Structure formats: structure tokens, C-alpha cells
Image (cartoon, rainbow, N blue to C red):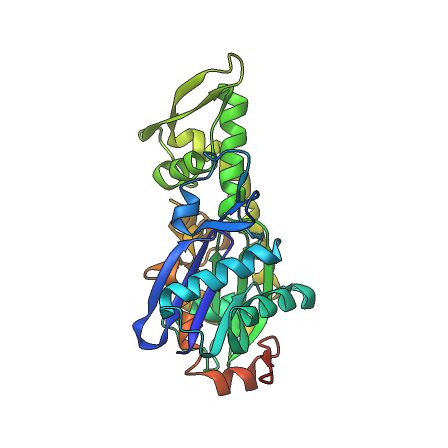
Length: 338
């Protein structure tokens, strides 16, 4: 019954033992203000975004990689765990994945939410560590490896060697910020307001931050800000490029900053091994080519990058002893049974 949870800003993924990822749905909760009850979580709640009456609030309980609404986050974790355990609440251990620069207060919120969901012991693992483990890399040797994990709320960049994080950075430049940039661009250029889901679909379908040629297109629907009436506009890949290129360039600069702080021997290893991209942002068209051009280091997405962190969180149980010995920031919180 060991459970690994990748509690992401955009999605929550749960692993159970050898079964791998058994739950993968959006990190969204629908709350009925009149009755005080949870109406829906996960995909059911996500489908309600922007479509509910006033008395139902659709909430994302995580913002920029950390818990912003503790009660809703607790409800989300508890309900998702119930789904995968058939409501059997006897759970010896849970490993929770957190951003690499999370504060103690933010860590405590994650731990308490998991504990209230029924965990007897809660372990925390940093996202870059989980990402590399989930991508299938051995991080125990004296060899530098660099990972860029681009999630929904944060991008974690780290260099690891000998079971330790040597250099790391965590920035709030990730999927949600890209979606917001697309909404702002469409609003500014076409005077049409589109929703989060439409922006996300445009990002997935059209985004190319390296060499857009205007050949790809799609239609999005929203509300015309001049007339107030429903409207439809046609977007091209070059539109999305102009909307998000500044964020992509900031991301490249942060990767270069981490490389500049990396010891020369490890930098040589990274030049040989390359930079590994994980998370949903790894699938953004042309991002690997852009980072490679800016850094001069070959860059590539891991296999199934979206699930890397979740898989690594589950694998952490196998490496618990070495990780706890080798990582300062992997914290263990054990609670006595009351």
C-alpha cells in the first residue's frame, strides 16, 4: 500500500507499488458553497471550469507548485486516494513530490494534507530527483546529470551527482504562465477573451518556440470584448510563438544560470550526456531545440515526460535509504499513531 503522489499545479498523479501510475487527473476541486460539500474532483471538476453557477466554485488548490487552499487540497488528496485504494484508509507510507525550493511552511502544508488523508508516514522528495529516477537514470554515480522539469506551476532545474543535488533553481515559468500569456495575446490582438481550456488546447496544438512558419492553424471560441457577443478567431503557430517566446527565452536564461554555477567537471559530463527535459512542458514544440541553441548542449525530452516525476516518486521507496542518506532536502516526517 505504499503510495507515491505527484501533487502538481495542473495534474495529480498517484502511483501504487509495482502498478505504476494508477491515477492521473487534473488538480481541480468543485465546491458547493450552499451545502459546504465537495461536488467533484479531478476530471469531473475540470469539465466544470467556467461553466458553473455562482454557488459552485471550481478551485485549483495549488498555485505555482505549492498549496494555496489547504482545505481543498486536503479534500483533493483524500478523494483521489480513496479512488485508488477502494476507500481502505490503512496506508503505511506516502511519498509526496514537491518543488526544489519549497519553504518549510509550504512543506508542512503538504505533509499535513497527506496526513489528514490517512498516511502514517509522509516522505518528501524533490521534483528534479523524482524526474531523473522516473526517466530511468542512475543518479548514484560520480557523473553529472541535468534535468529541467517543466510542470504546470513551476520549472525545476537541477544538476545531480552521487545521490545529491549540486546546483538547483525553481522558477514560476511553466505551463499555467504560458496559458495566461496566450489568453493575454489573443485578448490584445483579436479583442476576444478565451478561457483556460482553449488556451491550453492552442498551446498543445500550435506551440513552436523555435521555427514557426505559420502553416499550422486552429479556431478558438470566446467572447468578443467589443460587442460582448460570442466569437471565433483563427490562430496560427506564429501567434502562439509571439505570445510565449519571452517566457521560453526566460526559461533558457535560467538554464544558463544553473549551468554557470555548475562545477567544471560536472559541466563536462552534462556536455556529454545532454540536458533532459521532463514534465508536460517538455512537449512544447521546439523548446528542446531552443535550449540546445542557447546553451550549446544537446537537449532532449525523456520518454513519456509527463509521467516521469510520478514514476520517480513511486520508485523512491526502493531507494529510500540511499536517498535519505544522500539528500539533505529530502525530509522524513514520521508521526506516532494516536
